[in-house]
Length: 75
Length: 235
Image (cartoon, rainbow over all chains, first blue to last red):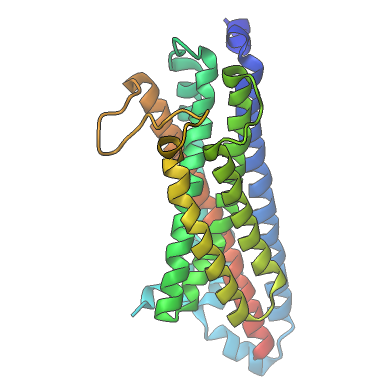
């Protein structure tokens, strides 16, 4: 059964390599985009943290800034 | 007019959505893989190699769909003078390029057992390669041009030239005598493929659409944070 699934009448290498390539491409793209997100978010946190009291007060009035700081986007 | 596109409002949704989309994608993709690799029957002519269709066709469909959407959004951005359309278009492009590459590579792998060659300068395959070049040009333009107005003009021009290629891809199998088979699925008429093969194809298409949505949301959130980073500099 497993041999049959892997071999697929001699087409196994073509089928499995196609599916593997697809999954690998998805994984690479996901990791790249995730890393870009983490980099920008860390940059934002660092900048936000270094603001003086007056500027921090202005920044706090924007909901999106609070949302960026609180958003975990755990995936 | 486009108040819904305001970053403050939209980020409330887009920051929370990725995890739910990810869960849904894993679920649909798992079902699709079982259907495509185990449950669906082999083809009487192509045998098991037909299973490649379940990744090749959805990838091609979605890459074409994304490029059309990018063009539409770029034109809307230009007409309505709203830069947010360009941000959405830019966030869609990476997944479009990946789907285009997946369609080309899996098509090439399918070509070897079916036609006896990895590559042919056939109208459908060549026009898909040209689409990948347009995707690359689009993404490179966003990277190399710093001036906002300039990059908007250039990327819109790239999409306008690129969209001419989309109907060529679609109808290339009808207009020319190509190695690539004609379309088996038609929205306007009865599909030429059996429901046992249509079902995994549709499930995989849904999974791929969810993946492109996931990447779009993550990329879009990154772009919004980038904008806010610049905003903090200006304070």
